[in-house]
Amino acid sequence: MTNQYLSVIDSGYLSRRPNGGEKTAEGTVAQLPLDVTVDSGSVFTLTSQASSTLDVSIAREGDEAYPKNALSGMDRASLPIIGDDNWGESVLNVSVTNKGTAEVTGIHLTPSVSNSWVLANGPQPIDRLAPGETRVVKFWARPTTEFGEATFTVDVSYAGEKTVASEGLVGVCGPRIKAEAVAADSVETRWEYGEEYKATDGDPATYWHSQYIDANKARLPETDTARKWPHWIDLKIGDGSTAYDVCALSYTPRAGDGPKASGRAKDVQIYLAGSLDGLKGQGDNKGNPNAQGNPVLATTLANVPGTVDIPVAGNGSYLRFRGTSAQADVAKNLTDVMSFAELGVRIGHAN
Ligand SMILES: [Ca+2]
Image (cartoon, rainbow, N blue to C red; front, side, top):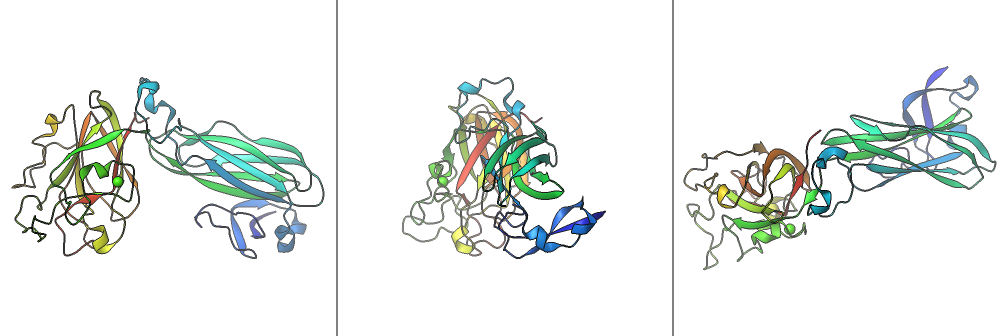
């Protein structure tokens, strides 16, 4: 018969989500996310489920993956890729441990993956597992679309007993490449350490911040052009001599909340050009912030800390990131400045 499958957690991970990877407390009665067919004699025999013989856990190699064809037509070896050698697959290491006192035979591992991800290999067997023995079985999953999250799930079964484990996956459009901030509309160096190069130094603790203090350590008047919206920062992509297909920006706002997060932008625009000069005139009129030029993207950012990927479709060797408003509940007494901790450039083709 078919029943909702209840299990008492003993020592295993039930799922990475939604509990964020924490181990579920021992003694918890959990409903697994599926119906299974069980022998009528075992229905509601929770004690036997608590002593489940197989312990299953999943370890993912790498933080993210991108489609294999993201860099088709490009010479990968010549790309100034930083911090990412994942070429389009996430490797899932599924560990199965026999925690019983008798040998277990005929174990089947059946993988699945959600959304538009695909698996390189299908169901895998483990012929036998001695008491206390652990085997690791690898599965390979990759995204077929440029962005999004998915869940890898594996059913591990033998002799009518089934254990389910799952792991979150992250898909991005392509790798990050070297990019360097080379100009900004203003920088705050008297009250902040806000030089523009800190927007691309790889350190989330440092940030670019637009100016709001004058030479006398007094606050600039709101009419001062250095303080007024719009604010912008210009990045050189690679060495500035090659135009790349840009598919996303990895954006990290300044950490913290309230005044400590002053400058977190809300409405932003992104521009691409073949040269630094090509960015000039693109939304940099301090007298008219509504004149935004021709951005490849104008969007509104959520007011959240941490890194997000902002999808972009464009081509260029220089990039401008421009802001025209602040988040509503960040630094209420300083709403006309802009800052952020890191801005990275992802290149590649969408599928
Ligand atoms: Ca930084």
